[in-house]
Length: 125
Image (cartoon, rainbow, N blue to C red; front, side, top):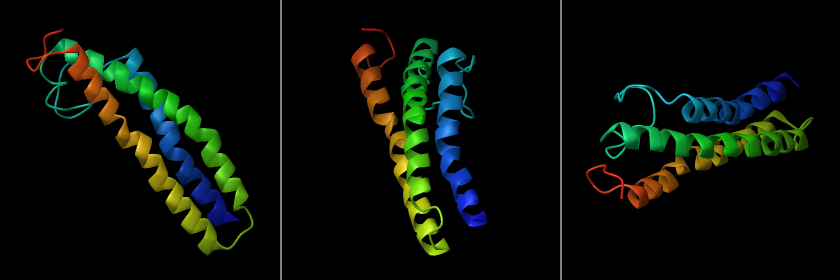
């Protein structure tokens, strides 16, 4: 049972971080363009406008995805409650990898939106 609780906490960590950072990014975009914290790509770091746009866009994606993943992750983990540690571990690890898809996958629509709204120099179209 302790291993199941541990895996449940681990599997809820990614959606909770997505909700938290998503809300932070679209409500309070990091003020300064920096290479340490935030959504950092070559396009987002062109100017303040692209920086704010990318954080707002990606933040909303993460926020919504995190809220969708929370109940799904809980449901999946509740289906393996009481199973062997091996099954719990496999399902929990698989769930962690599945959660990475929307976490990292948010880059694709964000970059597409940037290309749609800005030219290569970071000026609005």
